[in-house]
Amino acid sequence: MPETQDQKSQDIVSLLKEYISTKVELARLSAIERLTVVTSSLITISCVVMAALLTFLFASLTLAFFLGELLDSNAAGFGLVALLYLIIAVVIAKTKDQYINKHLQDFMVKIIFNKKKK
Image 1: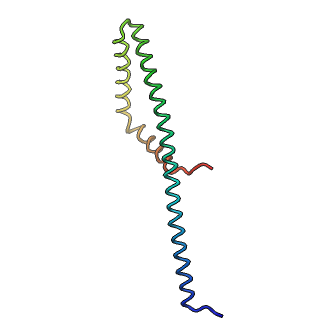
Image 2: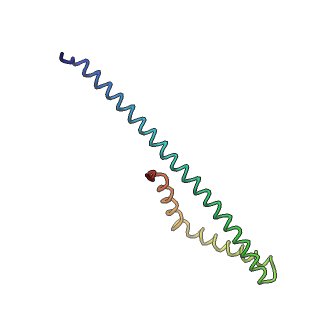
Image 3: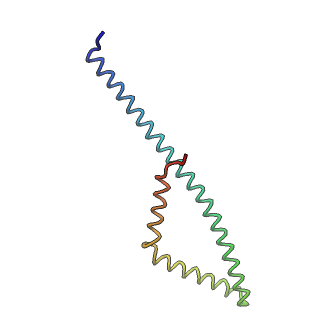
């Protein structure tokens, strides 16, 4: 028995609704996957940064006490370390637009758009 025009259009509408529903679900699942990848990356990067900061802190204290012992003055040792950090801060402030910002932006884009490794 041949299908009527009305039944064919209902089938097309039904298929179109199913297609749209599937595309919406795919977009939702893709967004969830991207969010979980970014979140897990941020958590692991945060742990690495915390460990690096603690290492940097203790290395700075060690250097300050060592210089203090060499100069027979802890204040002088800590002052030299503070001066070193001031110089580093000035250099970073002067070069951040040229070097640092671009690399940070590229790094963040890679994290956000990087697909989960299988």
